[in-house]
Image (cartoon, rainbow, N blue to C red; front, top):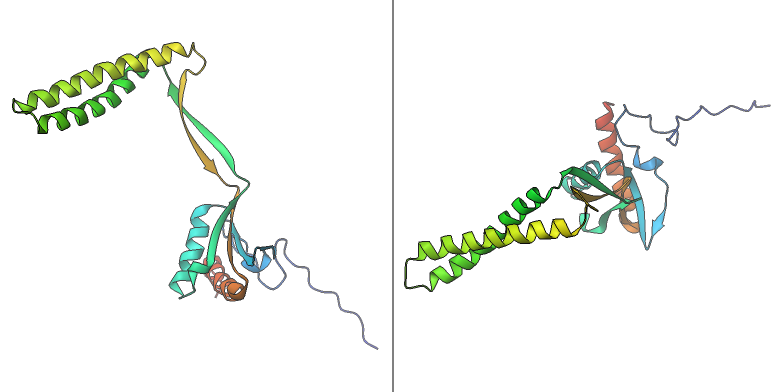
Length: 188
């Protein structure tokens, strides 16, 4: 009569065959869910884009056909970082800067075809562009009525990044990505 053996408890987030690495090392690809997307299989999930990019670079370094992989960001969110207050004077300054660039371009264009002193044509274009840019910038800000008195920068960010590969080469990719996780964890 044989006695039933109890299996060793697996670490959370692993399949029981790969020990977890130190904090910050992504979960081994074998622990990733085996989801299939249109003939492709998820081979790894990473918390940021740099790690997903590093994983694909590792595949490339090992002569894996990386043209058969993709990095997919999921759970997208729009993040708007507020940079500062926007006053009418600041709007006029920003308008003057963009107007000056446009005026410089127009001044250069007319200066090329001018028979007179082309430095003065370029300078005049720059000056007129800056003045009109400042006027339009200040007017545009004043017309908002204080509804948006700040400047900001928007970006799309994903909660996680999945590396997927064609189903035919997914096992090879998993093996290669597991080796990079072993090295990152300090295992020998």
